[in-house]
Image 1 (cartoon, rainbow, N blue to C red):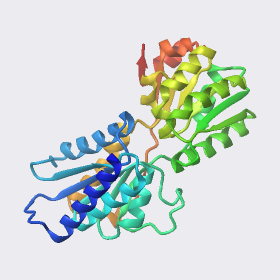
Image 2: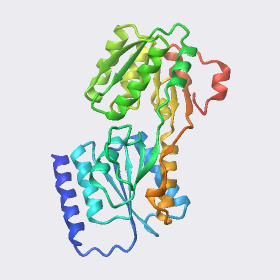
Image 3: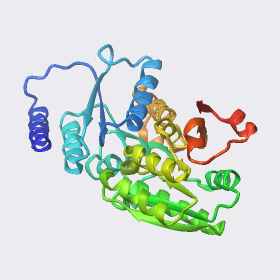
Image 4: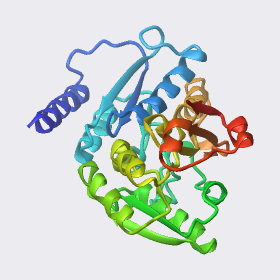
Length: 319
C-alpha cells in the first residue's frame, strides 16, 4: 500500500512539474534517483554530494538536490525519472543498474551521470542516449580469486548465492564463474529471489561442502550479509565479497571498488557538466582502483588466518 501511495504521489509531482503548479524555484536542480536506501548505495550518494560540495555546488545555496528513493520498485524509478524530465532538471544522477537502464529509456535531452553500475552497453542497452555518461566497474575478478587461493590453499569448490533478476549480479557472477573455471575450481550456484532466501541458500551451500562463499555485486545478498556470516561461522566457511565495505557486516574479505569513491568519481563528472562541459563530449570512466578490507575477528571465526604482509597491505582492517 505504501509503495502504491508513493507512486501516486510521484505521478502527482510529475504532473505538477509539467504544468508548473506555481513553482518559483530559481536554483538549478540536480535530480538523484536511487533504487533503494541501503548502507552501500547510500555511500555512493554521499560520494556524489560531497564531490559537488567540494567543487562549490552546495544544496540550498547555488543548486537544489532532489533525492528520490524508489523503495526497490522498478516502475517507481520510471516515474521518478519522468518527473525529473517534466521539471526540466539541470542534471540527473542515477545510482544502481536499474536506475541507469531506466534513464536510457526515459531521458533523452537532460545530461545523466550514472554511478554504481556497469556500462550501459555491457548491460545490453542497444541505444544509449548521447547525454548519458558515468563511472563504471570494469568487472575484474582475477585478483579476488587469487586471494581466495592464497588464503585457502586447498580451495576446490566455491559457492555463489545470487539473485538472477539482478542484471548487475548476473554479469558479476558470469565473470566470477569464468575466472573460477579458468583456475579449475568447481562452482556451486544457489539462486535466491530476495533477501529472505539468502540464509537457506547459504545453508544449502554449506551442506554441499563448499570451501568458500563469494557474493558478487548482488544487492539482495549484500542486504542479507548477516545470514551468510551466520552460516559461514557455524560451518567455518570464509565469506568473500566484491564490495569492500560489506566486510564491516561480517564478511572476511572484501576486494573491489569502494562505493563512496565510486560516487565521488561520478560526482566529479557531474561537476564538469554543471560547469559547462557537454555530457556528449565526456567519456565513460573505468574505476580501476580496488580496495582490500579485512575483518580479522570474523575471518578467524570463518576459518581464515591472515598473513601479516596481507594485513599490512590492506586498505582497511576491521579488528
